[in-house]
Image (cartoon, rainbow, N blue to C red; front, side, top):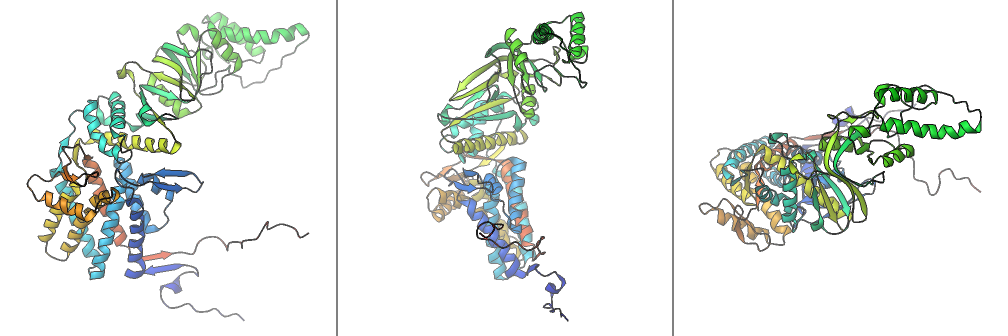
Length: 576
């Protein structure tokens, strides 16, 4: 008779065997804080213009060499539940303003480290959380007073270039002037009359290996890494017909049988097909089309109604874009009638092209009406590096609704990093369409907030003042990280900044990462977006309060049976 072994009294006796339970400060809270700090430490060294790159190999063994925190977190696949909360907060910041992910991680990690000190001093979690939330509200209240610049004209390339330079410098330091000008020109060129309607999807990126970053250029239209199907490679003043179907004759759903009695009929069979397809492409006479339809149907060749077969060439169309295969016979007649044929396999590319040239994608191979046709200044096949590309370009910038940046670099990893820098720049422009205010960068905004919040903490009664002061101290993590990554003494830099901010009108004083001297960030054009700082501070504080409020971790037994033991060699190998 088997006896069951009684479980230890307490929470464990309620759970299945194999479940785990952690509770209390030592087991739950401090462990969570430690995990979050390790995550923040990982991305801290990647912060700022002198941030170090991380080499990340994901689960499918793809290599990433980048200092972009959003990419690093995405590919790391963090599993720790508390660290995941910080990751989610940084992802929310990325979705909201397209930037500020590393700021959220560094600031949240610093706050949690200082919260641990307060917990060991004897403060309770509610007192710390209330202090952090009060300090966050104060920071959000003070932030508008720190605004030092407003982007007055979003249609000025020069003004927008200055506004985007700082965010791009954190990813591509040394190339920020060139890239900021390129991105500003691309964004300003397609800015709609209602600036809120600007879409980041309207700026496309094509990556072309070879040359250098300075060889990158802007295309007022779309660029596809493909070749033309037809012999004609360049068309000016193009009228474009876009089809989502193959460029071929449409087959009927019914089957037909062709009875060939002699050799002459066999020879005439292929020539009859050519004559019929040629008539479909070139003619717009209803009587001939009807006669052609009847003949095609009897020979098992295509088209089911008069509406499906219309004249294409006679409408003025000189470029055809197909979303499917291009048959040899259709291509033969397209070449005969000087039609340029381009094939695009992606339905998303077709949709964007329709938006670019103001065309309507047709589901069947019928001749488009003037309203359905797209118009483009030049459609041409070009060679960039060793790649053939097809370019749909508008010579007048006001006609373009989508712009493409053709990025050049010597390696794939540099191209990927350039694409992320462009993504950050475009997202920052999108932020500027919502709020044109900017605050000083180079650590100036954080030090000024830290100074004023520390002063605010002194005036607060109760134990919350300790956590408010720690919140102010956590803000120092940003200029410290900038200084550390630039090879400067962080303690010396922070003390210089505090001294500079005690002077009247010293709120814009930041650190020069090249020399370590104190500079005026507003005068030197080192500016951060107001909304980015606003959301980053709020989201980091919310994540920290959530992590601190967890006092117990309960993990159920993992699903599935026991794992098979590892075998040496093949498990089903027979003995010889």
